[in-house]
Image (cartoon, rainbow, N blue to C red; front, side, top):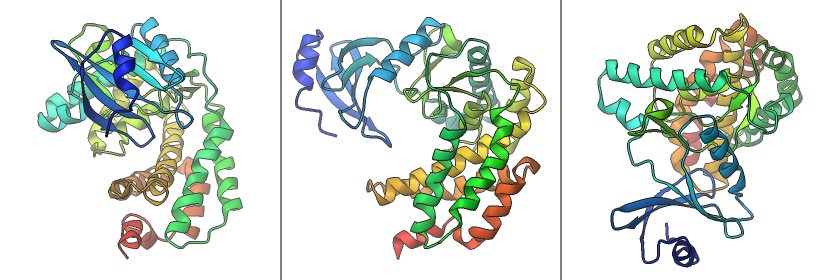
Amino acid sequence: MIPPATAPAFLAQAGWDGAAIVPLAGDASFRRYFRVLDGGRRAVLMDAPPPHEDPRPFIAIAEHLVGQGFAAPQILARDLDQGLVLIEDFGDERLKEYAESHNAEDELAVYGRAIDLLADLHRLPAADVPAYDHAVYQREVGLLTEWYCPAVGLAVDVDAYRAAWDAVLPIADQSKSPVVTVLRDYHAENIMLIDRPEARGLGLLDFQDALAGHPAYDLVSLLQDARRDVSPELEAAMLARYRVAALPPADFDAAYAILGAQRNAKIIGIFTRLWQRDGKPRYLSYLPRMWGLLERDLAHPALAPVKTWFDANIPADMRHHALEAHAQA
């Protein structure tokens, strides 16, 4: 987490000459974040190095969200050629740590605010972004057979896997739900608690991959969180809250299960790739949770073809902790 060599000159040009640059966080991509401190001022420096990263989608979605009344970071300065962006600092209080350090009543309340924010977002027209469509869903679920299955030594029927998804995805594709802005990583580590009146006091991060798609997807991101346990009781309460706020159509429950299975299968593949290709083994510790969530989703009748494929191709003892055991062997 050494700042890029060009950072001091970029900050000086932006009016932050001599500011301290302190490591803040890295993530699953090539992006890195640093806190910039200058007396009583502070901001966040995003390092999104080309050609691996392009900060323009982040900027565009941030400006779109702010224009719709949500709290996305203000863009203070940018150098697109170097992939450097100086953004507003939302502080350190994430929904994750707040929920884990407070009682169940407080957890319920803060998740309720996050659900209400989604309902607000889903009442508005979608951003001008590409569609989250059948082809994208298929490409993403393919990450499981591309990365996870070989990593645990399984040769599986990939054609049948695609066919099983082809059989169930139309329920989500053709849902009567509105097409909305899908932030895609709307979870407890990307939702900040901020002392501001707009957007229910919640600051949004990590939305640069936003697409236009089904409203259930971000509910899955939040309530089937890859990085923390959300109890089935809390998930059910929040889904009930969303139904009251957004009045979704009758096919919503099936679409939620399908997109839950789709997202969880994708994440199993991504986390395997992060270990195998990118040298980030810590993501393997999340796989047991992801398999548990995936199996819950597969139990929905709408997912019967996909469940049949999993039962035939990935035995129970090759799930959950299986990859961790392979990695340690």
